Length: 252
Image (tube, rainbow, N blue to C red; front, side, top):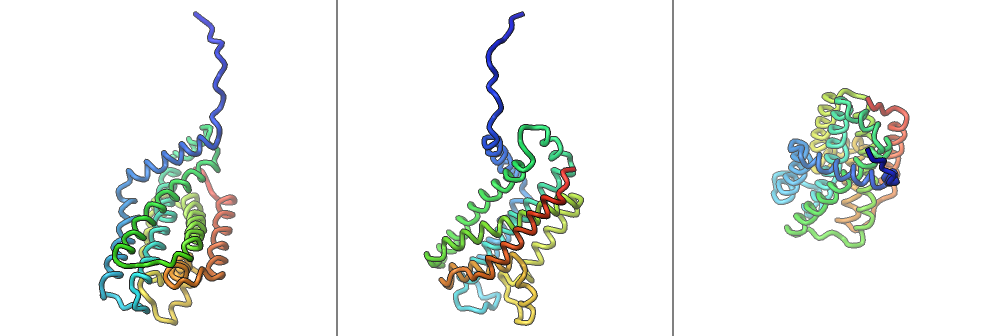
């Protein structure tokens, strides 16, 4: 028997571990066909069905200028809220999150990796939706792109915070059902794509998906930039969500 005196390679740096986990999270998401359907199909059908036809009366003659930002908002919500909450909830219910706690990946690193995979998916959806919109004649204002990207990033953080706290407190089946129902309600009643009466609109102004859609319309379609109120609202949702995760997220 020989004694191996070769020095150990040491621990893998945490950033490398997080990047590897991000890639793994992305691969797992791409294998969930039902999740991909929720993420992609409703926003695309909304863009094509409402943006290119007269089936829904819109408050502006620029149909694509109204619908494309709304479709982007739905895509962000579907990915950072529905998809993230559902996957995390089932992993928690099956004990996957607890087992990952025994690996070199820190708990905060796991959540960061999940958000990283969400960001990659949202980037792909932005390319798809913006590309489709421009193909059919939508011309976003170049000066509003930077603000729009920042608003999408902030909304992603806000949705992720809510997704994590739901996944960390509710049963997996309840999380999946609640997030999908909320998503469907937002498509119809969130003033995101389908305009609501003036009296009803006031009740949607505090919703993050509504703030994202209206902010994107202001920046990309109207060229007026993102109003400060939308930044503040999404920032508040982000802070409340992330603080709630720190205080009440349960790993098992």
